[in-house]
Image 1 (cartoon, rainbow, N blue to C red):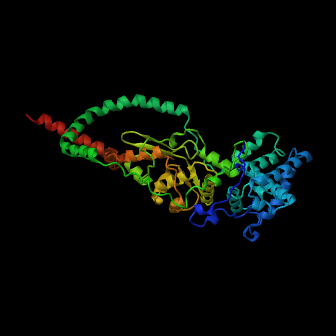
Image 2: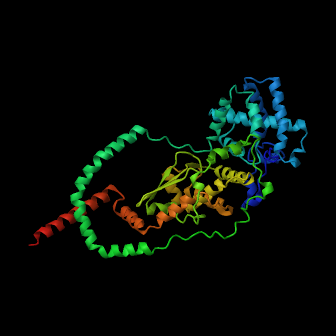
Length: 476
């Protein structure tokens, strides 16, 4: 039996956000659908008048527009009433509602089509207006049913693959694509060189390293004994207080409000939902949601700069999905893989509307958890600089401090899912708790931060080894 609420388009819940909630749900350039139809026109620009012209362009560009097809679209427009709150739709007559849906739907598809083909000049908009429209199309209250848009696209594109490709290309503007991977044959060559050179280097260094290690161990045996005692007695990182109440601003909506905004076929019901599914990249049983008994609710206690000091490196993951976070550790170092993301003027609005969507749709709080996870890594501009240098953050907003403030501000009223990234945070905290790793990392930063310091250390070590050897053989 179909859930009667599964088609509802819920509205932006202001109580979930502390600071200026309407700032992130009100349109800047264009109103779409019934929720923002009565938005004051003096607050919007000239683009409202451009919608009718773009609708005519859409009809002219259509290859298979027919009277029968138009009637099907008109019927779909009236059926779309069921997606919206009845208190809003009852203000429209059938004719007015159908007209609004046709104009807004044709505008969206014409805009997406030009963006998908990079035909920016045909939009007749300034760069700033294009940015504002892209932002407005992803507002929770600015959505049209995807099923209605599909019926419109069927009048213009001959195959389903054609319009799917255009929509996917448009959504890819919001999701940072990973850089091209190094070809496999390059890795094969590098591996072969490593296998050949490793024994040669070992043979050259053994006569130097063995005497040096013996001397160091003999001279530092007291310090090593103290270090081992500290490792045994060092306390674990502080555990999270799981009994503290959730923020009232972030409590999930009551069960009767948790109606997932999906279509009858279980697919996302609108563009924002489609972007959410691509951003999160759902995978059943994803390992980042798993936790073992007693390990639930880890918090991350180290910023990006501090993790770098301890010897943990950063690397962009191979997808833009927020779930694609991995941590690979060894005894002396670690690598944290994070999804690359572009930060610009519309990023905050997009992320908060995705947060509002997953709260209303009763989804796992992946976007919320991602924002909080990034906030734990970012304290100031130095952390942003570190992530930016590793191609994880692409700053199109302004200064690095502005990016840090963006994540810090968003996180104020958000509460992450206790399971999200839980094993990642636990492994990082465990890795950072190793005192020996901190010492080795500090030693590497001090003596191996550049080729010149490496040469200096090797020269000094060689001199020390030769002196010790000479002294040993000089003793009668």
